[in-house]
Structures are given as C-alpha cells and as structure tokens.
Amino acid sequence: MPRRPAKVTQADLARAIRAAKEAGASAVSVDADGVIRIALTSSAVPTKLTTGLDEIWVPSEALQRYLKRTESG
Image (cartoon, rainbow, N blue to C red; front, side, top):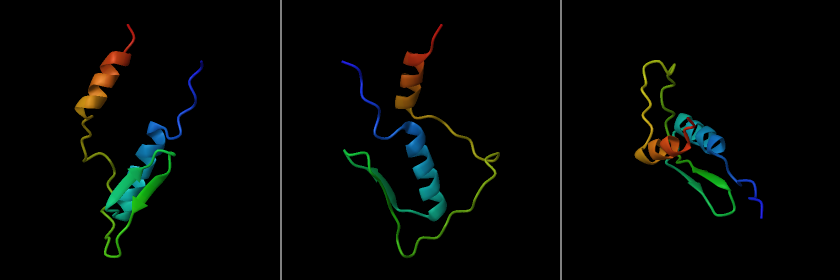
C-alpha cells in the first residue's frame, strides 16, 4: 500500500515557526489534521530581524540522527 502524502511538511513547519518568531508569537502547534496554529498575545513585540549572518543554527539531536540515517554513500 503506498504511503499517503504528508499533511504538513517540514518546510511548512519551518515557515510557520519563522513567521511566528517574527510576529512575537508565544506558541506554534500542529494538530492531528495538519492544522498549524500560531498563538499570538496582545503584548507580543516582534523580534529584531536578523540578516542570518550573525546567527548560528545547530540542528537538534533528533534531526542529526535522522540526517545521519538518510545519508547516502
């Protein structure tokens, strides 16, 4: 039986989280139906936008394990 397409992709989540951070959101959640909810507060202050050059991204341990499993070669 073929796998069904994902309701929410990793790219969708990354875009939602990035937008939520820029908007000063307090939480991002995804339900079983694939609906992404961003909780904003009335006192939310947008964070300072960065160029991305001064920020170092480190993948989580779970993502590192996943990437190691999926490497070809």
